[in-house]
Length: 400
Ligand SMILES: *Cc1c(COP(=O)(O)O)cnc(C)c1O
Image 1: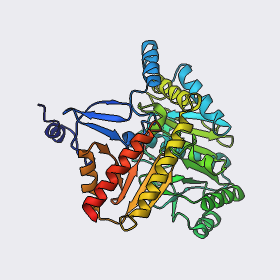
Image 2: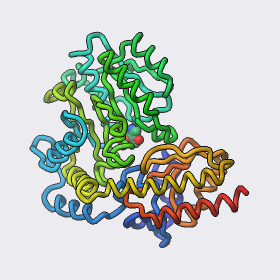
Image 3: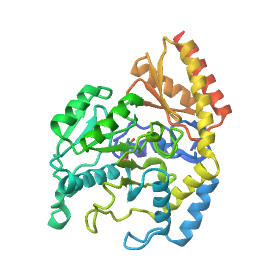
Image 4: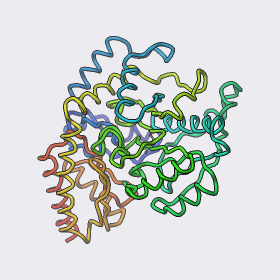
């Protein structure tokens, strides 16, 4: 049998500590490895596979668009992407979309657009306020090395100003907004990679109020929280906010790379031809899959169904926490984005993950001791029960 683990170590750089399973296929809410084992997927490729795997609507769209065209470049009108942009705008804020291929590229687009606003309308405001422990991507400086003045001259150097604030510290946020006159505040409504840490309703309201008061752009990174993950298309919609800029990616491509930003009325007309772009985005195939995702979420009621199953999962997790307070510290997040904060060590949680994986249940661990669940919205109650049962068995066996 092929030793995928050794081949991986020989030929692919170890930028991630990989789980030692080689995936052969994925179907519904399950992954299958090359040895025939099956795993309930509570990770969904890091919040990407919102509808699980091989959803019929996704496969239909894949085939239909695949037979038309895969790539045309952004020189042409691209019907699947135009339709997707219209639907994203109609279901969020009045504005326009710029498409990218990934989350980090969406962040790059946001930085450039905010900078353009700073120069044209910022009235001396500059820089972006971000939260401590935030995650917005990993790219570094391609524009710095591009030496065509027409391409780089209007945009900031990689060392543009930013201000890091402590989430939930309203006084600090107010002080930074008043003294530094930033152009924008950028926040994840629920920090994902930072440990599934939600911002409180009160803090988000105050953030929005300060932005309004000082003419600062309110920007939401919905790359992980978006596309139905928390029970609404975007998480900010739980709080009645009206952001100026929304970053999206992960779930929107139905499993293919796609990202972008939705720019509200203050920003939507700033980018002009030549200001920004990339070869592949918007991929017509990714956009067609994105439309299929929205069809299923909105027209087939999957967002509602996912919200109901999530409520059930939450109620069962709360029971677990009450029964095992010395193991489970708290359960945080919203909808199908859940962090089970434990009182155990990183090693204990790693063993926990490994053992449940052997029993056919895949969950993720973030911030060392937080069990992160990013289940598909297609999860069933029976699968919730199975997961809870296995969790409880493990805790009894191991910790009591
Ligand atoms: C994953 C993520 C990103 C980066 O997306 P990539 O597609 O990995 O570049 C940015 N922001 C948030 C909130 C994310 O979860």
